[in-house]
Length: 397
Image 1 (cartoon, rainbow, N blue to C red):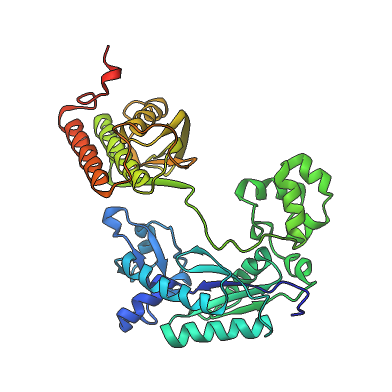
Image 2: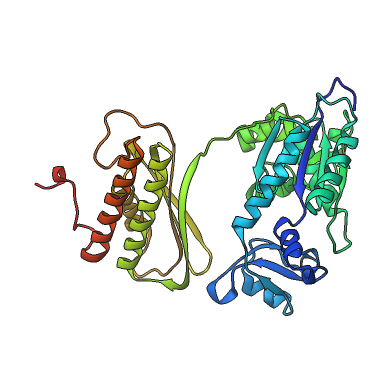
C-alpha cells in the first residue's frame, strides 16, 4: 500500500475457544463440537468448531437446538480463565508489531501499521504466521485503509473459505477500491444496518451496499435520520475513525439465566437485590458512580425487555440500585409472568461526586473491605427478613 494511505489490519482469531480446547484435547480436532453450557441447564453455544458450523450450529444458539441440528455434537465446558490468559499472550504479540492496537474483544483487535515500511499484506502474513507458530492459534485478517472496510474484509475472507476447517484467510482491499469491494455485498454486511433497517431497505428496493451508495443521501437521511446519512458515507467505504488504544468501561451488569422459569415474584425481587449488590460492589471497587439503572427481562419465549431509569443524583450503593431496579421490575413484569433471565446493570459511569455516605466505598483498603462486609451483611439480613429489614434512618418517618 502507498505510504499516503493508512494501513489498518483487523485481526480475528478463528473459533478461538475451540482452538484453545483442541490444544488441551487434540482428539477434538476435526470433530463437530461446541464450547458452552449444558442443554439441561439452558446453556448456549459460546463457540463451535467449523465442522459443527457446516451443520448449522452457531454461537449464541441454545445448546439444545444445536444438539437437534447435530445429534453427535460434542459439548465442551468453557474455561474462561484459560481463554483470558491465552488472549493476553496474543495481544502481547500484536503490541510487538505496533503500539496502536485497539482490542475489541477477547479474540479480536484493530492495528494501525501505517508507520511500518513493509506492505500491509506482508505485515498481516507475518502476524498470522507468528501467532500460529508461537501460540498454535489460527487467525484471519482484513487489510484496508480504514477500520470499517478492514472488519468487513475479514468477514468476507472467512466466508469465502468453505473447507470445514479454520479459514486462516487474509483479505486485502487496496486503496481506492473500498466502494467497489463493498458494492456487491448485502446491506446487512454494513455496520449500522440491523434487521429492521434491512427490512425497510428491502421494501425500497435497496438490496446491496452499492444500492445504498447510489441512493440519494438526502432521502436516506429523511427516512432513517442521522443513521441514514452515516450509512450513505459508510457504503462508499469512508471511515476516518482512529485506533482507540484504551477503552473505559461504559456499563456494569449482572445477569442470571434460570434452569427453570421463575414466576415467584418474591424470589425475583430477592435476586434483583442480590444482583444490585454485586453491581454496587464492582462500582465501588472501581471508584465509580452511575446515573442510569437498567433491568433486563427475558420471557420463556425469548422475548427480551430492557428498561432503564435515570437517577436524580449518581448512585453507588446496592440499596439505591436495587430500589430503582425493583421499581422497573414492578412496572414491567405482568403478575405471575414467568421469567427465563433477569439482569441488573448500570451505565452513565463517572467518578464519585460530593460527600460520601456510609454506603460509599472509602479509598483506604481496610475501610473498603469493611464497607464490603457491611454491604454483604445488609444483603444477608434482607434475604432472611425481607427487603424492608434494613433501611436508612432518613427513610423512617
